Image (cartoon, rainbow, N blue to C red):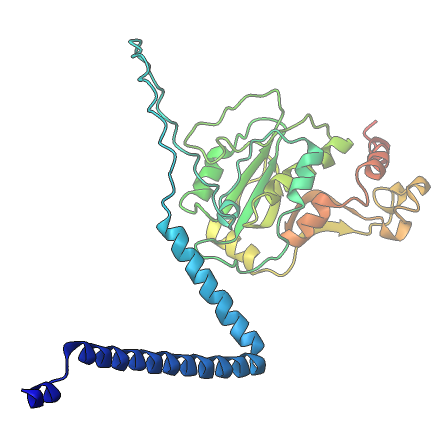
Length: 334
């Protein structure tokens, strides 16, 4: 019995042994944790000492992420939407709306279309405006820079009355449309007497009274030239009267003028009473004796000379007006 008690110790002794063992394990665990924390602290202190800026940046970033996480977790009360407005009372009056007008069409592009189209002979320009407008026409002659446009001959009629020979001219121009232009300067008091099927119908330019031997005759010729110069396709210019008639057919006249390199103006030095003796010293220095010529008012010129004769300012308007005041005496009309 005594041996059994020695072999089996009492329970209180065993519990003390177990408690002592657990206490020892706890002490050892805490010691190991302390040693690990101490080693980690020493390591971090050396790392922070070597890299202070990088460590501070990482800590600041961690703090920012932590703060943003907190803000996301906190709900924000949004204001409630305002109540809808009360419905407006129904207006029983019927409202009529006008249809919207279509937008204005864009301006056409700038091109040569308006130049190709022959201008109308009727306009509201005065002589000064007409001469200025005609001066802007191209001076370059020869082939045109676009298709379907042929050079034309401008037939300019300076008349004192009706065109009695108009039927003959109608036959002359028949079948050759697009190769000629017609301009008529007549007494402004006379009305349109040409039938609609005549080539002269609607071809009268804005005219003024003309008296033989007066400056207004030269002004009428310039007026005809300026109107003809408005159509840039006119390359040859012929001044005619109501008593002129064609001696050849249209093709012969057209090709002769277009193929010619010369102009036809009657001007020559004629000694004697009807020529050189009509010169007056008052014409100097604008016109000198060696420049004085006798000739006819009827002419045929190309476009270059027409621009100089029709739009030149050397003798017009004041000088030529003074010069032509001598015309009745020089030509012995009075």
